[in-house]
Length: 207
Ligand code: B1M
Image (cartoon, rainbow, N blue to C red):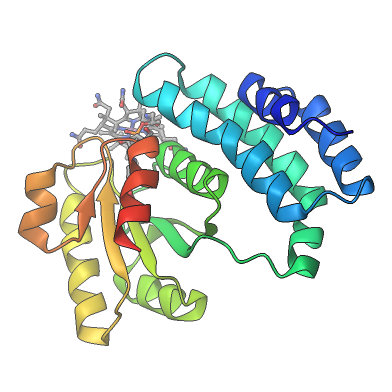
């Protein structure tokens, strides 16, 4: 019988081959897809999130764990859809206008997916009007804005203003190396997260 603890441990180790093999075996045996997701894949990514926050693992380990999860998800996703398993929530994350940095934003996307969110990656250098269009198209409940430059932080404020002007009701969270909680408060964001693992906790609390 497929061992879901072995599946979560494979994700933690970033062992994509075992993650895919155990996921396939569990599907073939008729294990509930939601259980495979929650007790195998998400459980593993949760451990990575906790260890990342505690500086016990670093970006490379997060990336290989996320790759293992992603490869297993490719075979699990159709089964989840068939079974009607709902994602935890819908989020859309992008880097604001003028800013091309995407490594941190990509980590946030991966960790949110790992936690069970349905995430749209809006890309980089996203203008306020593009953000409004993409949020409306995605029907996301949570929007994430990332900025790595002090010179692009004001684009966060412009984007939030564009959301308010357009009546976008999604909760807004922001992050990136130069961003602070004080700045989030100043520009009217609903929350700030200092790292990708905290972004998951914040997104859950904003739902
Ligand atoms: Co640039 N760059 N860069 N750069 N770059 C920095 C940010 C800089 C600090 C380097 C320096 O001078 N010491 C500096 C900014 C200075 C400032 O504004 N205060 C800088 C500069 C000046 C520039 C250019 C202007 C350089 C030039 O051309 N003269 C230029 C700007 C281009 C542009 O964006 N328009 C530029 C270009 C680039 C590259 C393209 C070469 C490359 C980006 C490649 C890419 O992203 N695909 C690059 C890189 C790699 C860096 C550094 C070295 C690393 C950034 C990074 O990826 N960190 C960076 C210096 C440094 O940080 N040591 C630097 C790792 C990443 C995981 O961390 O992105 O902070 P981070 O994400 C964290 C958290 O911040 C948080 O979670 C992540 C994971 O825990 N987080 C969120 C991020 N987004 C979040 C969103 C959330 C929540 C949390 O909710 C939505």
